Every structure is written in C-alpha cells, then in structure tokens.
Length: 372
Ligand SMILES: *[C@@H]1O[C@H](CO)[C@@H](O)[C@H](O)[C@H]1NC(C)=O
Ligand SMILES: *[C@@H]1O[C@H](CO)[C@@H](O)[C@H](O)[C@H]1NC(C)=O
Ligand SMILES: *[C@@H]1O[C@H](CO)[C@@H](O)[C@H](O)[C@H]1NC(C)=O
Ligand SMILES: *[C@@H]1O[C@H](CO)[C@@H](O)[C@H](O)[C@H]1NC(C)=O
Ligand SMILES: *[C@@H]1O[C@H](CO)[C@@H](O)[C@H](O)[C@H]1NC(C)=O
Ligand SMILES: *[C@@H]1O[C@H](CO)[C@@H](O)[C@H](O)[C@H]1NC(C)=O
Image 1 (cartoon, helix red, strand yellow):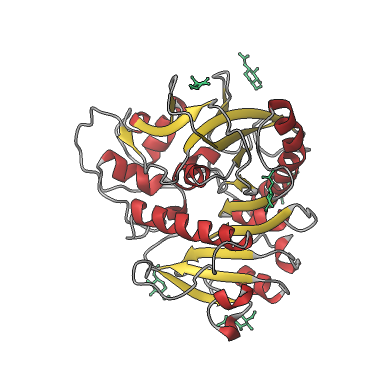
Image 2 (cartoon, helix red, strand yellow):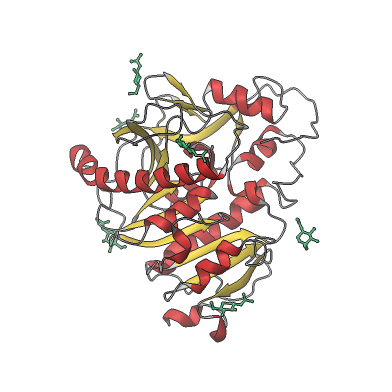
C-alpha cells in the first residue's frame, strides 16, 4: 500500500500524544501469547501462536514505564511508507499503564474481541480500543504474527511478516480471512482460563466482536455458532466471498462505513443484507475513507503534520473520525446491552457526518423504535 504524503517538514522534539481516552477509567495494558496452530499458515510467521493486546479499565494512576505506541521496526516501515522522516513515529506516546492493577469488581460489560485490517497490527486502533477500556470494557485485540510487516513479542524479538505492499490476491485474502476467523475462536476459547489464572474481573460469558476491513468481515463471520457472542460490528470491511455473505448471523450487526461503501459498490454488502433475518443497521460517515477507521490519520495530527488527504483517507481528519467511531461503536454496544436508545437515535447536528443508510427496521424509521 502506498501513501503519498504532502509533508510539512518541521522538527518535533517532544513526544506526541495520540487522542487520549475520554472515559472515567485509566487504561491498563498487557500482552499475552496464545498458543494456536494455523494449518498451512500462508504467512512467514511461526503458525503456532497469536499475540493478544489486552486493554482494560484500571484505577492505577502510576506508570512504571511508558508504553510505546509503536515498535522501532514498525516505525521505520510505516514511516517510510508514509514518507515521514525516520524517527518521527517513534515519538508517538500512549496513556496506557502496563500490567496495571485490575478493578476489584467486574464492570458488567461484555469483553470485546478485535480483529484488525489485513496486514495491519492490532495496536493500530489505540484511539478506539483504549477508549472502550476507559469506559469499562476489556478489549482483546489479536495479532497474527507473520501477517503484519512486524510483530514484536513481549520479549522484544520481532517476527517479520508479509511485506507492507504485499499483493492480497484472492487466494491470500481467502486464506487470511479463514485464519482470522479461527484466530477469534481460538482467543475466545483461551480467554476463560487466562482470566481464571490471572484472577481478572473480566467477562468470560459475554463477548462483542469488532473489526476493521478484513477484520470486520472476520468478526461477523465468527459470531454465528458462538452463543456467547452477542453482537458484531464491521468497520468498512467488504465481506469474504467464501463465508459470510450467505450466513444469517443471528445477532445484531452494525456496519459502519465510508460514504461510498454501498450495496452498489460492494455486492457483498447487498448479499449480506439480503441474508439477515435479525437486526442489522448500516451507518455511513461523510468525509471518511477506508483507512480512517484505524489510527493512521491521528498520527499526522499528533505529529503536527498536514492531514492525509488521498484515496484511503478522507477530509474528515483523524480526531473527528476517532470521535465519531468512539461514539457509534459505544452507542451500538450500549444498545446491545440495553442501555442506549439506538445507534442513530435521531438526526443530530453535532454528529451530522454520520448518516443512517439502511437497516432491518428501515420501514420503521430510526432504530430507537426497535427496543422501546
Ligand atoms: C501502581 O500502584 C498500585 C497501587 O498504588 C500498585 O498496586 C501497583 O502495583 C502499581 N503498578 C505499577 C505498574 O507500578
Ligand atoms: C458479562 O456481560 C453481561 C452483559 O452482556 C452481563 O450481564 C454480565 O453481568 C457480565 N459479567 C461479568 C462478570 O461482568
Ligand atoms: C521471544 O518470544 C517468541 C514468542 O514466544 C519466541 O518465539 C522467541 O524464541 C523468543 N525469543 C527469545 C530470544 O527468547
Ligand atoms: C493458494 O495458496 C496455497 C497455499 O499457499 C497454494 O498451495 C495454492 O497453489 C494457491 N493457489 C493459487 C491459485 O494460487
Ligand atoms: C463517491 O462516489 C461518487 C459517485 O460515484 C463520486 O462522485 C465521489 O467522488 C466519490 N467520493 C469519494 C470521496 O470517493
Ligand atoms: C434496505 O434494506 C431492505 C431490507 O434488507 C431492502 O429490502 C432494501 O432494498 C434496502 N434498501 C436499499 C436502498 O438498499
């Protein structure tokens, strides 16, 4: 993938913060290796383990050591792709507290399982995932070592993966999508023992599946057949031709997309919608493009660079799309838990970029009527 960047050259000496989480909790962070065999793994990775990043609520205010946002090898690879001077991305900082204390009681929210875009790392969604944790959710974000350009293990060793500009052929896409779905199932199966061993107050009975791009498709594909998964949310991901589209998912599904991601431009979304008998809804965000649903657009803002305006990034900008993604992902999860009135409860001037496109209760108008 290529990003041609209109770069404002400048010198940045201090650390640059990504959008801070806005919830009542601080955010703890830990990483764990999940043993899991991927038969015929098409990536250069070991095929015998996953790396998960756990974001969770904490009251700890102390930070023994800052958690870097990006590892040094990834910073070089992504920085070069974005035509940024070497060393700049290494300055991005997080508000995470490594291995922080758990809360003394559960917050009552389901656990969120997250799958990133193809070739992307799970840490590239800090703006959204850490924010969910600051609102009381435990988020388990899954890396498949060998698929993104670099995965850094907790011991500091790197696994070099597919090239950043790898051609995702139909064959590779099918194979990666398949292992993404089984990776989600593997982490779901691993989680209860992990929680038990760590005596963590995390929810092991109810889950929400969330993903971007291929990870969004994988999240929806994974949900049926796992009764503990209460809902799935796909951020702008076209569905795999091989699995999802002909399945009636059976739990609520939110599709959140760039404005031009429609049932006409993506027949997999039309086919998906035709096969659902349960609740689903599609909302689109004016000014957003496909890669605005990860952190990249916020990197530029944090570093004081000109916004990325090109094919995969829209004019909306990193901080605005982060706010919008936080709001609607949070509203959807809240609605699934019975808290909120609906995903787009009513037209709003404040959130006017987000529009209701279609949904299972289209005939009844806005979705708040569904649960009232
Ligand atoms: C932070 O402080 C809490 C309580 O003061 C302590 O239990 C915990 O171990 C500390 N965490 C770290 C990472 O230093
Ligand atoms: C898990 O989530 C469900 C709601 O989805 C909630 O009813 C339950 O209390 C939660 N359990 C824990 C231990 O947080
Ligand atoms: C670091 O951890 C990875 C993953 O468990 C392992 O494959 C690798 O051998 C370890 N490296 C060292 C130097 O211990
Ligand atoms: C798809 O990938 C598999 C495994 O790498 C390989 O055996 C097969 O030949 C590939 N098929 C095509 C059509 O490239
Ligand atoms: C969206 O699609 C319309 C109609 O095809 C096109 O005119 C417009 O340029 C597209 N917008 C973006 C941001 O791609
Ligand atoms: C909206 O969804 C309904 C229900 O699936 C479908 O019948 C209708 O054709 C869709 N409308 C558009 C404009 O896509």
